[in-house]
Image (cartoon, rainbow, N blue to C red; front, side, top):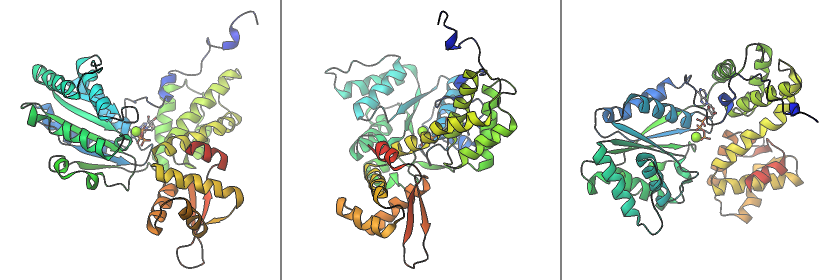
Length: 375
Ligand SMILES: Nc1ncnc2c1ncn2[C@@H]1O[C@H](COP(=O)(O)OP(=O)(O)OP(=O)(O)O)[C@@H](O)[C@H]1O
Ligand SMILES: [Mg+2]
C-alpha cells in the first residue's frame, strides 16, 4: 500500500472520542443529583475553612461512584483554592506508603523522595504544606477495599483523620468508595478509628433501564456527529446494555460499533455493527466486576465455572458440597456469596420447586472465560 490511507485517520464519525473512555467525566451527571448534593453537604464546612465531614459512597460496580467524586473534585478545583481535593485510586496505591506518597504528590506537585525516607517525614511534609498554604484537604480513597489488608485500611484512615492531633491546625476529611454493598466497613474498623471516622453512607442505587438509556443517549449526542447512531440503533444498544445491566457495556458498545462503521466507510451504524461489537463489549462487564470481588468470592465463582464443565444444570446443594471440600465455607457464607454473584450478574440463580433452599445455578458467561477472568 503506497499511502497510509488504510489507517483512515482523516475521516471520523466521532465528534469527541474521549466521551466513550472509561474515565471520562461528563459535564452533566444525570440521575446522580441526590448523591452529588449529599457529597457537597459533607464537604461544605471545608469551603469555609472547616473540617470536611467523612463519607462512604456505596453501590454496585458501574453505578457512578468514581465519576461522581471526580465531578465533585473538578468543580471544587474550579471554585476554590482553600479546599484541595486529592484522588487516590486504591487499586493502584495499595499500601500506606503509596497512599501518602500520592497525597504528597497531588498537594505539592511532584512525587516525594521515598528511598530511605521514613513515612513520618512524608506526613510531616504534607502537614507543613497544608499549614503553609492554609489548605483543607479532602482525600478520596477510591475502591478502598483494594488496600492491601485491614491493617492498611485502619492505618491509612487513622493517620488521615487524626493528622490534626500531631499537626494542630491541619484539617482533612475522607470520602471512601466501595462497590461491595453488603460489606459493613465501619464494623471492620478499630475503635480508635471509628471514634473519629464517623462517615455518612451515600447509596448509589443501580440505574433503571430508562436512566441508562438517557445517559447513553446523552453521550452519543456529545461524542458523535448527528445521524451516526439512529434512534433505532440506540434502542438496540440499550437492549444489549440491559442484559448485564452495566453502563460500561453500552459505552464500549457505542464506541466499537462506530469504529466498525467508520472502518467500513459508512456514515451510520447498522445492526450488524452493534452485533459484532457486542461480541467484545459484553465481556467488559465480566472483566470489570470480577476485579471487584474478594479472593474468596472469586474462588467460588471459579469453582462454579469449573463445575459447569461437567454438568450443565448445577444445583446450589451440589456446588456447596463440592466447594466445601476445597475451601472453608459455612452454609450461610456460601449463600451470601451466591447472592452477591447473582446481584452482580455473573451467575443466574433460580428457585427450584423442590422445597428447602435448593437453587439452580447458571453461569452468565462461557465457563473458560470466567475461569480466565478469575485468574
Ligand atoms: N450518571 C452518569 N452519567 C453519565 N455517565 C455515567 C453516570 N454514571 C456512570 N457513568 C459512566 O459509567 C461508567 C462507570 O461509572 P463509574 O466508573 O463512576 O462507576 P463506579 O460506581 O465507580 O464503578 P466501580 O465500583 O466498578 O468502580 C463510567 O464510564 C461513567 O462515565
Ligand atoms: Mg469506581
